[in-house]
Length: 222
Image (tube, rainbow, N blue to C red; front, side, top):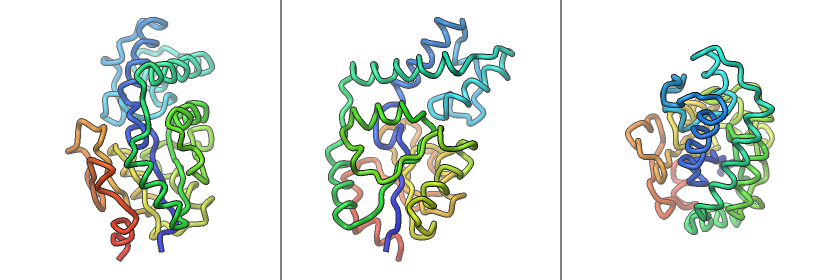
């Protein structure tokens, strides 16, 4: 029996990585005169993933500038929401079908993301899928960010799920590392990930939600 299915947000449930990168780049450039491409990313993903706090810390390490998170984060979150709306981003119908199938089979579903609570709520509102998720874990709920497994461990604890009977859907190397460290089986999602070669250590990789259903997930527990 599957006890939990946990989804990363950006790049898994929503094609938001381009919007997020574009807005982060713009705010850093216009407000702080910083070229994001020159800031080393500790995760080696060119700042296409990771939390905004990680980016702030990377800037501090890069040039010593202390960016006020109380100013920077709300501006970026608002910018991402507007950019996603302008792009007309919608939920993938095949993803919605899969979520409906999980719900029909009584499988607890959660989100575990490095995004802020506000940003996550914005994206779920745009997609219209919030009601599927019993638990939503964001950067506001944790102290350690991916690749640390805290977010996934917390999600499984709140769902009262055994890691060995839980699945994580991820699109990044650091997310996969976090899911595996939490003890869950990880499915790599490459729908929106241009660097498909970076997803190692997964139980399965998919590049379309048409390739995933409840029975296939169940078979991976066997």
